[in-house]
Image 1 (cartoon, one colour):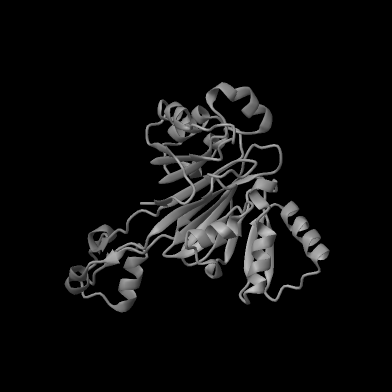
Image 2: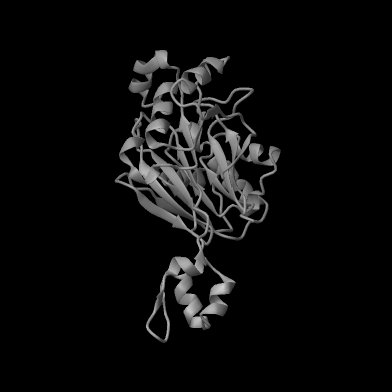
Length: 306
């Protein structure tokens, strides 16, 4: 059975928190190991509310340095310090976020008893920025008023499973098994070649998730994002506000849906809604008119990536 990969929405509003929506933050969980994406005001409270094991977070990914994406960061780091965290925390963010952290640290005079490592993001092309035994993460530049990145999270590929019958039929040694699992054909003593595909069962395709917020439409240029299992794309405004979206570096519902359609993604979830909208049903209808496999997120919702 495959280990679960889920996305939990901690905040889905833009600019300011509202009674129904916190500002931007999400948790990607791979077999219950959490990775934090953006950290708007109140994020640590949301993690407590929705049962996220904060102590297990080892990597944080910040898209850009606007307040609704980072104002919860220092408070969370400080809380980790107060509760006795000892393991390092790695933060992948624009360099401005590190400068902001340094200013706050100096102001409060806080000494952290665990290591906080900042990794500056690049805004040139698709870059691999993180890797562990579970996932690889790539950043890519977005089109906003300040330097901003989206993130592609991809499950680590599994090895092919070798058939027991192949081991017995061809009397494979341990060295042969290792080579076949790595993709090699097998050569018998009489010179016959047994094709790799006859001996193995290929693993299921790696699951992929894309986080894309605070941007005008721009993802079509990235072939690496084609056909992902789940795309989160901002839809700050309805289609009537296209000029305002362009001016502020955001997207409308129909623009986000068009991106999803062009990238041939399996599912689209929309968020980062302007607080001006009390009824979001018309926004969903607009998006569905372009791309049917979409929904609007709510804080606290969890999506299975499969």
